[in-house]
Amino acid sequence: MSVLAETFAAARADNRAALIAYLPAGFPSPVDCVPVLAAMVENGVDAVEIGLPYSDPLMDGPVIQSAVEGSLRAGTRVADVMKTVAGVAGTGAPTLVMSYWNPIERYGVDRFATELAGAGGVGVITPDLTPEESQEWTRATDEQGIDRVFLVAPSSTDARLAKVAGACNGFVYAASTMGVTGARTSLSSGARGLVERVRGVTNLPVCVGVGVSNAAQASEVASYADGVIVGSAFVKALAEADSPAQGAAAAAKLAADLAAGVRAGRRHA
Image (cartoon, rainbow, N blue to C red):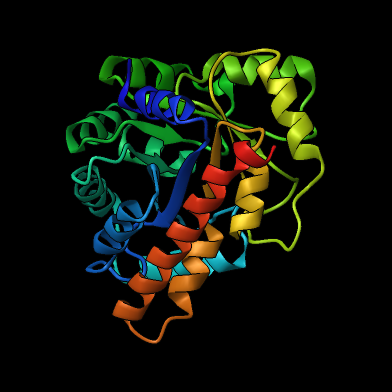
């Protein structure tokens, strides 16, 4: 059983969903990224996604785009992403990379998978890679024991859900709504139905992301999903802080609030 699978199994044994947090590597600064993520893990985050900064982030909303642009200006490259993965993996939390396909392909598929495994990374989320184009990636990740995560959306047909889920071996990322990432005041009513449809074609965990920003929303999603993914809300809390210390405190508090929401989800269902 992989480290990621063990995390989901432990959450199930605790009758709750897992809380997964996202931050781009190099944000809020190259120095502060790992300590901030460590504080989030200490306050209830179960697994971490490290974003690989990319100049054409098609899925990202303005909050994450701004953070990614700042990270790129600070000089963050793939080697820095790997160092961030190693630092966060040292906390004991399963650590994944979320990356568009172009940077991985340009870096070298085998090189990327090998270095990620060496850094202690357990998986990669590729939002713009399709199963039909993933043969090389599947081979490289299988060789290194790296879990693959692909995305499905409310518009996906049942046949497409089966195709995408069949290419995954970590979990299935269910985008709660069509469009870019970003905190929302309310969640799509289609997210629950999407999770149910995915469960009809796979036994893998199904995690919901895009839009979750507070404890109430986390609790709602946790009542039916195996994992709750939060990104923009953490980025926003850090971006609005007056100092690195205040940012770390804000991110830690948000993690604790979201963790409480996740843990209440099944009890309130």
